[in-house]
Image 1 (cartoon, helix red, strand yellow):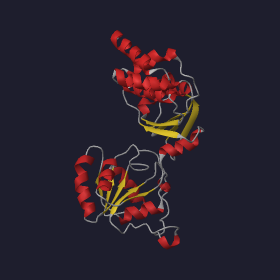
Image 2 (cartoon, rainbow, N blue to C red):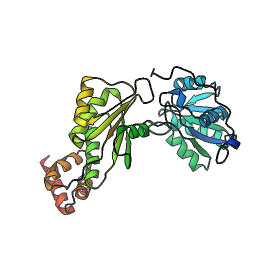
Image 3 (cartoon, one colour):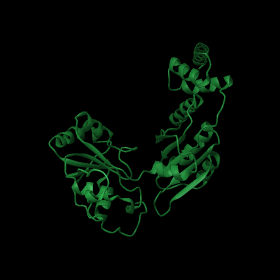
Length: 307
């Protein structure tokens, strides 16, 4: 289990809407509320989040065992039920029926803000489509915390989530991102990654994005929190020698300004043609390089024929 704050937090006072700015929370009404939870340190749970979980009739959890530790810490006795990628489609119609009957349901993920690389999106879409009330309690998020600690430009930024686990698909995804950068995208890129793939992913990033400034943040808010900053090549070398543990966020600095060169066309097209049709690859490459579309299409056809 991950390291966490060892000292129990004091029991929070009941939330009093009259002492707050804005409108009362409305948790006594039916609807679905998305509650952000700590990403490691249990002391980061908000008073509003605690109130929402206590007021709910049922808490939907990515993993009920993980959420049970949080609920026990704060003395919350609300019943829980699992909602994860394997049962969300089947469970959603039943949950919508409960919400339509006036139920108060809360949704949490194992850590951080629900729906951000976590289950719940299909349920929220269905609730909105049914005209049901959907609220949210803001809180911790690993991507934004890593961003502000990285030393990289904080805006604009593009949250990608997890890159594909297989190298061929991952390299193709990075190549499409580079093509978008050549077409004008300039943003800090934010990824999540599993510890056992970190070194390989960093090496692929260095190959596709170049040796730009980057950062690896892991175990945020926990006892062994680490933010390592440097070039992608140096980071790949470090984590190839020292295996990482825990929850990991990888950040890559914006692409430097560059003038697309015609000599880059073949390598770009060859990468795009692995996953796209000739027409799709040519359209993307033409936009990225600024070359005439007919010229790029003809070259794509030639490369496909050679392959």
